[in-house]
Length: 245
Ligand SMILES: [Zn+2]
View 1: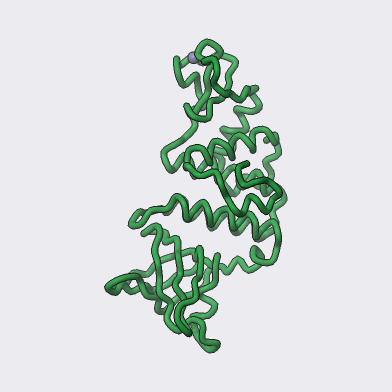
View 2: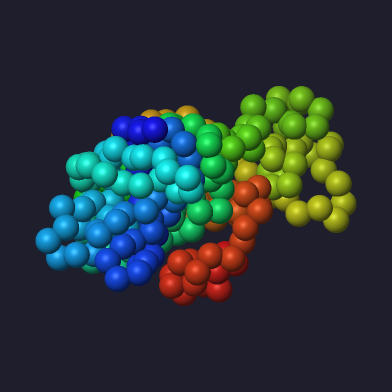
C-alpha cells in the first residue's frame, strides 16, 4: 500500500548504521512514524528529505509495522529556522505542541496548513512573532474543540456586561455571574477585539497586527496550555521563563 502524502518532520532519530526513524506530522493521517532506510549515507538521495522541520511531499509504503519512505521532494526545508535563535525556539515550541496534541489516523489538514504558514512566516523573519504564536495557539485550541466564547456571558447570555474572562469556563463572564474565589482576567472592549481578531483573521493578515497587548498574548498562552493539558515546555524555558508561563 502506498500513499502520496505531505508531511512535516518533527523529529529524526538515528537507527542502525545508515537509517533514520522519523516522527512526522502527516497532513491526512496525523501522527505517523516513518522508516527512512539508508538516509544517512552521504550519497543518499533521501539525505535532504529527512531533516527535522522539513515540509516534504513523499511516497510512503506501509509495511507490517511503520511506514517506509521512498521517493519524495522537499517543499520547504525551513533551513533558516534552525539557524536563527527566535526561529529555533518558537519552532521547537510548535513541535512540542504537535507532539502532544496530534493523534494517529486523523486528518489535520487545517492544522497542517496553518503550521506550514507559521513556519514560513517565522523563517521570513516576521517582526511580531509573539502575535503569530498567539494566533496559532487560539486557532489550534479552537480546532481541538475549545473555542473561547466571546459574544456574551458564557453563563447567562447577557450581552452588555463588563466582562471578565474565565480560562477554565472558556469564555466571557458578566459581573452577575462571577463567583468568589475564582480567577478572572478583566477585559475592556479592545481586549475582546484583539481575541476575536486573532481567532478569526487569516494567518496571512497577521503580519501587521499591532492592537494586541502583552496581557492578551499571555492570556491566550495560559488559555491554550490549560485546555491542551500541558504546561511544561522545554522550549519556553529557553525564553527565560520556567516553562510554566
Ligand atoms: Zn452572566
